[in-house]
Each structure stands twice: as C-alpha cells, then as structure tokens.
Image (cartoon, rainbow, N blue to C red; front, side, top):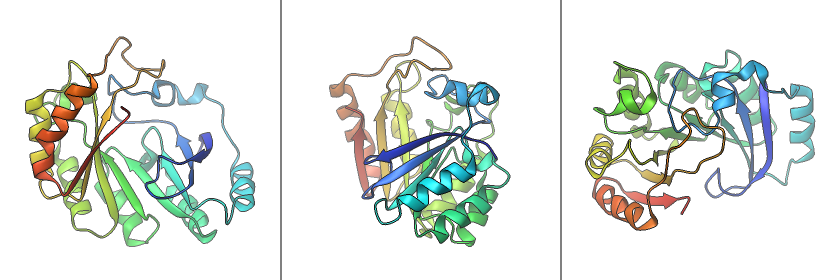
Length: 230
C-alpha cells in the first residue's frame, strides 16, 4: 500500500468534522475531469509517505482532529485498506471513505467490520451517460447499482455527489441521476474546478446560475441536496 499524499487539515472534506485527508494512487476509471490525473495515471511517479510517518502524525493529532478522509484515486483498490482503517479507528478517529462505487463487495466488508463511519460515493452521471463520463466505452453500471442499494440501506452515513462539467452533464442527465438515487439521504452537486492536473485538459464549469438551476432539478428526488464549490 502506497500513500501518496497527506493533507494535514481539512474543514470541508468530512461534513461536521475537523479532519485530515489521505491520498492513494490508482483508479479503474478515466474520468476526463479527474483532478488527480497523476495519481490515477502515473501513481508510480508520485512521491510516497511512509506509514510510520503517517501514524506519528495521527498520534500527535489525537484530540485535535476528529476524522480521517480516505481518497484517491480509488481507495478500494488498495489490498491492505482494511488493516489501515482498523489501525486508524483504534486511534479513535472516525473514517470517511471516498469511492467511485465500482467495488460494492469490498465496501460491504468494510461496513460489516465497522471500519468506516461515512461514505461519499461519486455518482458520475445518469446511467446512460456513464460510459462517456468515466472514459470507458460499454461501462457496466451493475456495480454502481449495487453500491447505491448498499448505501441506501442506511447502515452508515453517506452522500452521493456529482462533479458537474460542461459537455458531460445536462439538465436531463442530472435529473436522471437524481431519479436513480431517489429517496437518498444526501446529494451534492460539485462545481468543476480545473486543478491543472486533469486527464482531459480544457474542460469548463457551469455558471453559478446554471448550477442553482440544476440543484432545483435534483432536489425533489432526495432528502437533502446542496451545491459545493461555488
């Protein structure tokens, strides 16, 4: 397991908690708007942080930080993730896991072991637009369906979120995405931001007014909906 980044403080990534964020490399998807292209495409070229350094930091921050966010890339690709999360939980931290929803069986094992307190799943688009949005022709959305059902069982706090990008998302596709998760607890539309490390450079965001319109479209389908990044 290779840890490629540590953000020592975030007040945004874990709702309601002061946290740090761990970044892991590798992903099975090729979303054009991915803002961590180096971690996805070339994880071997990124510097690593020893676990000894990570746990020295976490022990020092006990009582100051509430949680640890696990992101990527796709963290569920990491073979030793359960062992890492167990060690983090034993230090008293809550764990938030970011996932693309492609590995429901692995996620369920973590939930069964009570190693995750909050899950944020990236719902990339409507079912019909998934292949183009994740950069994989003929993408099979069956695992996405399974993860959606798993989260909506309510065994863990969760949110769905969609990064909204011109050329990939429309009023129709966002409405269909919200219908897909009808009845979900939380759904957030995230405004696209060009990080300078994109898989497909040149993509653009929608205006704040357009994002507010999209929000009104998805609101009827979920219990709580919001905008991020405006």
